[in-house]
Image (tube, helix red, strand yellow):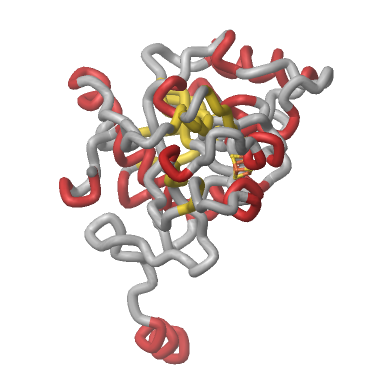
Length: 257
Ligand code: SF4
């Protein structure tokens, strides 16, 4: 017992001070992309051709990136001779509407909080049912890690539950395979109303690298209204946490912008 107390004393408090302070991210972390069309020569389409998911589009002299498709592989950054695309260290990427994931040179319109009625219901206690709809386990792992003592998701009143009937919302990962399509819809229908739906990762948002594959049923947005889109492949746990806290209006005002 004394050894345990001594170990606890030695280790100190391990939960990260986020959101009071900015998260500590690794050097190789790739966050919000920065697009500078003015650097992009008219006749160059190298990045568009290199992109494995057709996330980049060039119309005239304007370059666009669909964050809902982007895998953050950085092939576009590497191939661009004029640095028109680069990646910042900004982990904040969650938005409320699919169209807000289309990145141009403008700042990203980050997610607004739920309306007052929904915040009164879920602001201090949000139970989520997670469905991996054919995911590779990367997004699932980064969602799962939020339950560890470093992130301690429970301190915000957010918990994962085993049944949709006990949940206030659904968190979807994976590209929604044909095999998981019905299960996902049934899970959504089993949620008590009102409910929130969160799509995590490029697969859940657009199909990611599996877009157009015959075994993919397609974007869940066809059948299920999505309240929060968290892009990435996979999104960093801080990106997911930022999105959840934004939705519940639980972020410090300094971290909101
Ligand atoms: S980082 Fe995104 S936009 Fe760039 S090549 Fe990879 S998938 Fe395409």
